[in-house]
Image (cartoon, rainbow, N blue to C red):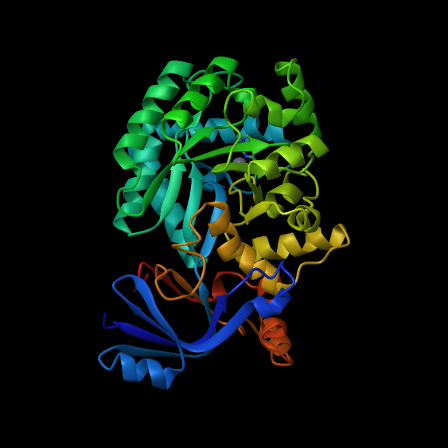
Length: 427
Ligand code: GUN
Ligand code: ZN
C-alpha cells in the first residue's frame, strides 16, 4: 500500500501503558509516520519511510509532537450551547440548565446545527473520537451520526433514555425507549465509523421497567457499548438509594437489570464502595473520569491512581457541558490537579495515554484508534509545544520530551493544536 502522506515531527507511540512498571518507557518516539487509505502504514526514520513510499507528500512539521487523536469517552453534545452555566450542583444544574436546553433537540435543524458546531469545536481541540449522549429525541441521534458520517469520523452515541424525574417533553417510556433505541441501533451501528451505545441516562431518570427494557436490549445486542452515570455526587447517591430501596448500592441499580458487564461505560464513578469497585473490576467495566466536570459541579476527587493500581479499565473525558471545556488538554490538566489534591500526581506520559489509548481501551476500540502504530486508523493530532509566549519560554528549558509537553498540557488550548487528522485527512 503506497502512502499518501509522510508526516515528519516527533511521533509519539505507546508499546505499553505508562501505568505499568514500564512507566514513561512505555512511550517511544519516532521521526516520521506514513499515512495512506485512512490508515497508519509505518512509523520510523524519515529516510526509511521516504524510501518505502517515494510518491508520498512530505509534511515537515518541525519539532511538533504528533500523537494519536484525542478520544473523549463521555460527552453530552446537546449541552454545547449551555456549557459553563453557573453555580448549581448536579440535580439543580440538570433541572435549571440542562433539561431546558435538551428540549430543543426535538427540532432536527437545531440538533444538526449543534452537532456540527460541537464537531467543529472538538476538531479544533484535537479530538477525533467522541462517545456522546444525545437527548431522548431520535432526531438528536440522527443529527449527530449524520454530521460525523459526513466528516468520516469515528463516533459512538445513543438516544438518552428517561421515563421519570424529567420534565414533560423530555420523557419517553420503557417501550418507546426500547423501540427507538433498537431502531437507531439497527440503522446506524457499524455503518462507516459509527457505533451505537445503549444509553439509559442514570438510575434516577429511569423507572425499573425502563432499566429492565435497557437490559433486555443490551442482552439482544451484547456487542454494543452501554453508557450511563455512576456515583457522581453524594446527594445523588442518596436519591438513588431512596428510589431503589432494595438496592445494595448505586451500582446494584444497574447490576440487577443486566446493565453491568464488560462494554459498560460508567461516567464519574467517584464515590464507590468496596463492593462496587470489586464488581466493576470483576466485570472489566470501564470507568470514565471527567475531571473538569467533577471540579465544576463540585462532585469530588476520582481516585485514578488507586483504581488503576487495582486493575480497572479507565478512560478520560470532558463531560461537556457539565465539564467546563471542549479541550482534552484542559481535561488532562484537571486530571493532574485532581491527582495532586489526592497526593498522587500523574506523569505527562500517563495523561497523554489516558486521553488517547486509555479512552480507546475504555471504549473497546484500542485495536483501531488511540495509538500511532501500523494498521491503526489515521486519526492524529499535531501539537505545537510552543503555542503561546508563556508556554514557549517554559518548554524552551525542557530537558526531555515530557518536560517539553507538560506546559502545553497545563497551559495549552486550541492554539496548541497545529493540525487535526481524521481518517487520514487533515481537517
Ligand atoms: N448525570 C445525569 N445526567 C448528567 C449530565 O448530563 N451531566 C452530568 N455531569 N451528570 C449527569
Ligand atoms: Zn455525563
